[in-house]
Picture 1 (cartoon, helix red, strand yellow):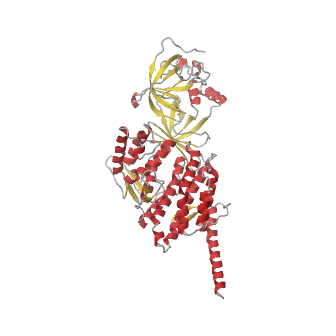
Picture 2 (picture 1 turned 180 degrees about the vertical axis):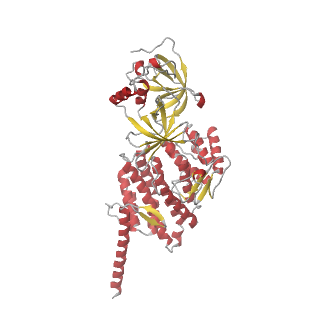
Length: 592
């Protein structure tokens, strides 16, 4: 056989084996299996490319990237997926492959940020229209991490010293994009899929074994430092998880992710457990499929680590003190969009989980097994309190707001001749008020952990709801403190009970500020509770609070004014405020 024929045969054989290898990859990817790269599980899915691109040609891939219109998010997402999946299968030259990946980072970051806005505002149920967007976003982060892992694998077998020097960057990037994928599940308030935490631990341990964990590489996506190590990226994921991400508003979560990168360099990972005298502390089990957990809940950790945050605690205190002195948040590296007092308030709330590495729970929880009736609509809650629907015709129809025969003074109630529960429930159905039954899993003095097995209402973080507990009599008002949808679709929620029983009132901005023809809006009076050291407060429509603003309030047949004092808490549909009651002598609401 001649040399030319031999070369041709060798090329055909090599091509055949390459096709076999790619076929194995494709079969695994199409069946949503995991590919193993450097011993790590990587989820890999493939879509066929509609573009005539040679994915082995770095120049063509670069030109394809430059031609993308990133403002067309849907088309850009599809195109980026095609590019990354095509390169992963084609396996181009490691240097060219890495150059394309690095060139794509800014574009991908912008497109992903715009796409995630579609589900960031409210918790995302698995059967919602935005579900496909979440799947695309997480898939893109995952395939990007996979591409870096494939490059790293080929670099490991390369004899090119210049390429081997890129191992540190490749290590940081694949851990970074794996954490970005996990962050999207936090953002959508979804339960973390099985295996993601364990994969992250394995990736970090591999970085330690390779000696790349502590070395920083340039990273333009890190707004504070402009650089990041694999360890700092790993620690930032631990900090996000420890900061109760499911209890944060979309704005708070954005700050939380940025601040986790900002403060990660002030933490240290230590082998074994770090037991403190007065605080339980957190432990990290490197063999478990979870993040940081209280030490008492992980006493039998097989491969424990501690996260030392002593240096971070002092730094957080220093930053808070600077904010109190009027130093801008931007100059402190917290971000140009951080405003006061929300910025300082969030940072103070992070001091315990981040600075002390301890759980911030105020009251202990106890197991419970019962059900509760939930009113998602506050208007429905008002109906169940008063027995009558709330009217918004701008006329003071006080009989529609509360049962005057059951009211004595502000915030007080006495037993009256109320309608039976059966009649009220029947009337609620006629009015279109929807009630849901939620299971109570555990409870504390402050509230409940609840699970909704059925129901399709869209609930939001810090939304005001009505709650009727068996054998408790009166309907109470509560606030959603955290939300998480499980992979199976059920809603898990933390519910904080407001002091009660509440009273229904009608409120309107006083004077000519909004015009005398403005309709009255639904409001609630929350009575004081001396045992909890809470003062009387008023629930008003979200966005109404301004210090010293006056509202006209109708309650118990009497019209009076409330001068707003302080914002107690800001909610999704209602704000809770403190106020000073100012009587208007001789003025009563018309009763019909």
